[in-house]
Each structure stands twice: as C-alpha cells, then as structure tokens.
Image (cartoon, rainbow, N blue to C red; front, side):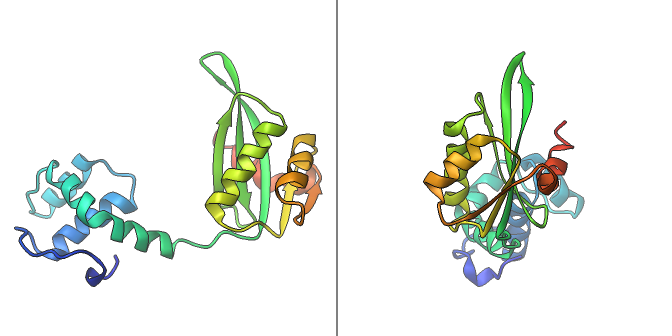
Length: 176
C-alpha cells in the first residue's frame, strides 16, 4: 500500500484511515467488484456498504492508483508486435498485441483491418502509453509494420523474422 500521507485527509470519516486505505487499495490493485471488496471487509468484521466504496475511491483512489502505477515494472526497450485473427459475432477482426522482451503485455488493440493504417494506430497508441520509443521493434513479415515504422519511428531498429517474434506469438496462446 502507499503511504497514507500521500492521500487526501481522512478526517471526518467513521472508519480509521487503515480500513479505508485497505478497501481502496484492494479495489484498485486487483480486479475486484465493489461487492467483493465489501465481502472481504465483512469477513474481517468490518461492515461497509458497497455504496460507500465508490465514494472512497473517488476521493482517495487517484493517490493509490498513482502509487501502484509507479511500482509496476518498467517496460523493456525491445517490442515484439504481432496480430492474430478473431471472429466476433461472425465478423473477422484482428487482435494486435505488443509485448516487451520480458513477456509483459504493453498493449492490445482489436481492429477490423490489417493494413498500414491499423499498424499506425497501434504504434501511436503504444508510443503515447509508453512515452518513449523502443530500441528494437521485432515483427513478423507483415509489410504494414515496415511502412508504418518508417513514418512513425524512423530511428528505431526493425527486425522482421518469423522466428524472432515467438515472444508475441506465445502471448497470443491464451487468446486462441
């Protein structure tokens, strides 16, 4: 948990700062619903309404979210990009995915096309989110990546090889 001093004032609340902090931290750190957090607190003998939790989240959540984001591992400087076909309600879509050298998923994007414009959208979204370009970009032999890279990130080294992109291919396996 983050330091309580980084949060807004807990004065005037019925519960101590530790309980509010625990509830807000649980909600923002793990994919839990408000009712699940309510049940976890109830298991510990703390009766809190699930309606109170969003109020706490609005007031204290940003400080906790910032602290959690700061402690996440930093993305690597080698990006593996790949796409896989999906059928959603009988319509073909493409799931574009970017993974760093450690296997951490950087971003996922579902689009209806597989062309230069779609690759450009993925790279721009990645750059905006990561706030720095990679040292190396590894892709399969899809020509859209090369054309987009020349426009968006001309100084980045680009390696196109089927075997080098196994990191991204393995990242798709749970989706398949």
